[in-house]
Structure formats: structure tokens, C-alpha cells
Amino acid sequence: MIFVFHHFDLFGFTFNLYGAPHFPARPFDLIYHMKDPQANNPLHGVTLEKMLHHLVEQYGWEEMGRQINIRCFNFDPSVKSSLTFLRKTPWAREQVEKMYVQSLRD
Image 1 (tube, one colour):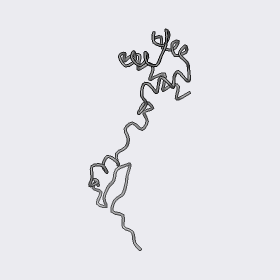
Image 2 (cartoon, rainbow, N blue to C red):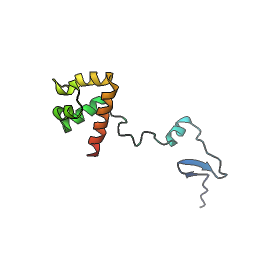
Image 3 (cartoon, helix red, strand yellow):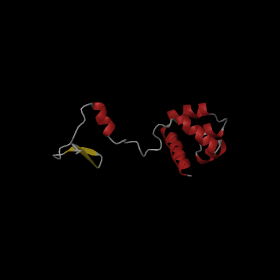
């Protein structure tokens, strides 16, 4: 029994025997063959609420307020008030995201 390979993969791209790129017949197949651009992003698929719960569990409100000096962490802290503030304040959200990524590395 002889097998003939009509296509081969090279660095994530598919080519036919003549060296021309092979494109799947259906658009879904083309999407399936593409590399995931978010594969190395630790924030991909993580909501702000999940980040907050993780940080509160790992550090507690007091330590979070010490590292990021914002009122919603220091005075009567709650997830709801923090979410409201962080969704309206990009610089604070960036700080929380940095803290979350750092907590994953620890």
C-alpha cells in the first residue's frame, strides 16, 4: 500500500506538493489553522471580577490597598465598588491587571 501526501505543513502553514499555499475549502478550516494570537496573554478570558476575587483571596484588601493606593481598596472595600471604579478609571485598572499578572508568577 502506497501513501501519497498531497499537502505538508511548514512553520504552521500548509503547502501542496508544488510549493503553493493550500487554503482550506471552508472559511472555518482557515480559522482553525491560524495560530491563536492570545495564546501567551495571561489576561485573555479573565474578567475584571475574576481578577479581583483572585487578588482578594491571595493578598486581602489591606495589602491590595497598600500596593495600589485607591479609595475603593482602603475604605469599606467591596468587589462591587471596586468594579465600578476600575471600569471607569483606566490607570487603576492597568495597575490591577499588572498586580494580577505578577500574582500568577509568584
